[in-house]
Length: 373
Image (cartoon, rainbow, N blue to C red; front, side, top):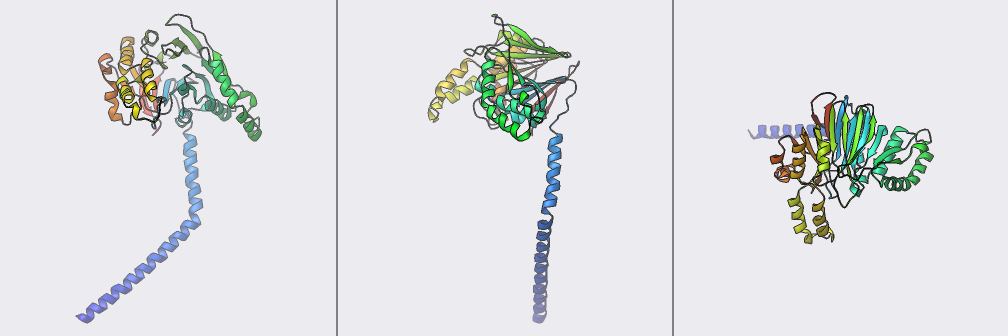
């Protein structure tokens, strides 16, 4: 028996040694193959990724109104939300309402073709609504080889804003023309041109700023004092309509111009959550936080305010954006909304970057999907 055990042990040792040798040989062959074919395989994979990404840059929009949330945040830092910006497709036209920090990337990632932007519409001139203006003007010019500047609509003061960004980007414009040539980036198309509009003295004053190809865009006063002027926008196209509030408290003008619309996109702030931050502001190294969190309570709408507007106006769907303060988890959404559902019985959506709402022409449908994962 002892002899058999020794033979078995010897056989096992030899077998293990051969297996080990073959494993080592196999690993060497695999490593050699990877070294030999790594670049061709990586190139094929990279090419497929590039093709997939480029193919997704032009999202297909059916005839109707479409609103994409390219930024749903506020000046308070939020890793999940860019600064406020909403892209609106109306028929064959593309408009961008406000261009907050980081929103330009989302605009492209969501499949909106920056080279085909018809106009930028600014609600007011707070920094968090205009920070991305220079970049979006650049993207529209360079990606579309446009020969005319981008139209930038806004109330009185928009000239100052556009001139400032044009000046800041003037050196960059020269660099790009020198590198790419005037055919790819025509010098005449760089930057933007201000399209100012005036509103009457009435609290609910409005003016139609665009009316073409069945698309009507109306600018109207909202209340964001001491920021004056401040406006919201209403879009009408082929029996569908939507309103974007801009920054405002509860506003009778906003109520009037939202009557009967399919969708209302309203800024929102939770007063009690902001007050919690205010009460703990002494713990922050930011010396101005206590003053800022006290002041912002005076010129933003609460969830209940937005719900009252939507309910009285007979809005079909309420979407909240420009979320203040940032929410670390969607589990807090119901707490944030407070008593809003008492005042509005329709659907309320807490906006997230990448959401797209589609209103097909001459129908009552409202479709929703997510373009950013």
